[in-house]
Amino acid sequence: MLPAYTPRPNRPTKLCPYKPYILERIEAAKPHWIPATVLLREVKEQGYEGGLTRLRSFIFPYKQAKYDPVVRFETEPSVQMHDY
Image (cartoon, rainbow, N blue to C red; front, side):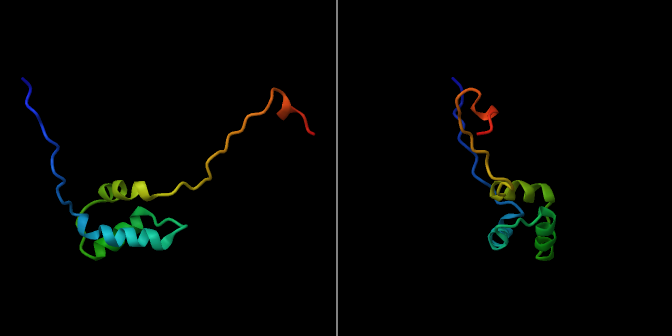
């Protein structure tokens, strides 16, 4: 019989104490985006000892698309070929 593994609990990271500040900065900058390197410099000034990769992976889900999504529409065959 296979052993039943349970999910590991989330361990705190070096970034955890700075997450509220980072989220606040992201929200305040909308609709613009603050580059990860700028945020890294700011949290390092506050004592963050981690790296850029962890910061980028944290902020990635909050980054908004720069472009509007493409809206698809269907037409009858050859309708788009004619200038009406």
